[in-house]
Length: 493
Image (cartoon, rainbow, N blue to C red):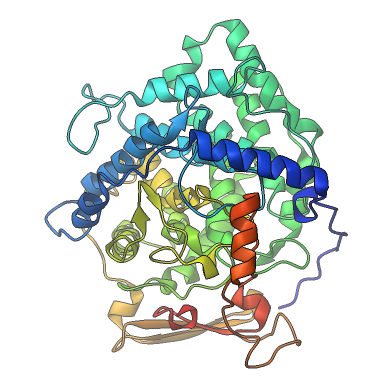
């Protein structure tokens, strides 16, 4: 099936075309990064890897310990009342300060979901060694500092096509998740300050793709907290124009079909549904259930057939499976979703997917070939999106206490087509391998040498270190013409 989507021109994005003034800012912020960055927090790296090798530790405890691992490192790296966090790693094409904002915006939803999950637990969240950790205060101070123009940790003004648009959505989600604990503790003046910062989103333009969902998420939270309705229904209508059927969205008129469907589109739509259950629930639920009906076949005990960009977000692959259960979908059982989620976490973490308190910049250990130029040291915390949903709804869907069901690949061979994205899915039980083959090329401009992962040159690496701006080759294999992807992931090595 081919769905024609109205095309729009890509706007001029300043960070993609830096001028001398921007390079000055990049250099200045890179120097500031060197001043404020902390030592690498490796205290719990061995411990968390050990946790995910142990069969006698249940999934709920593993998830709590994973969140504790993240929270402890955040406490170490954060500065200026938890408004920024300078994590170690390769920079993005944004400024170092924006990278540090991601160190907060992409971590707070996990901390807020953990706080939400721990309500009723008198002991509250704990560090990995069992000592208490004040997650509530982390969240409380972060929002107060980040939205105060007079504070050194101010998150700044929002402008069109700004990376802060993306980050504001995660910040808004964290505020909503933690609202029962912190919102009423702010004075009216403080609440107004926080909401005023988020309201800037209403005047921002974005690239014409999944970014429309960021603005919507912020607007949904504003409405939930204040009653003020700024919902951009035209942006939501545009998102639905990207829907091609069978649960799949194209990421913009010329975009990919890839795992952003899981951790971008359906993740955001799930939260819109949670914040306002009366908002187009029939479509949101139907689309997610349709996606999971075939997507569930992608999961194996040892990897997924990964295709597309943002490889470092891989731990979030199971997010739609858990979200569908919370929407009462019959497309998957709790036991199967639990097994897919657990095995996904274990497979990657056992193979070095966590280091220095954060997800590594790669599929397993750090791999500069797999880091997009828009990804910085903390971008990979989008890997926690499946964990966020599990913490949020795991209790009410009986995720923690249910027995596991075998995955489709463990039950037998299979072969079927996903016509909406022109893909064939093949599973071989004997080898425990799932293969996804696309029946159409993204590009005709290819040859045997072009269909490979390129390594960053020494000159580009030096430039990156000097300016603090990513200068890495683009390695989205879909865009290079690779059409076959195995759960054994050999394409990437």
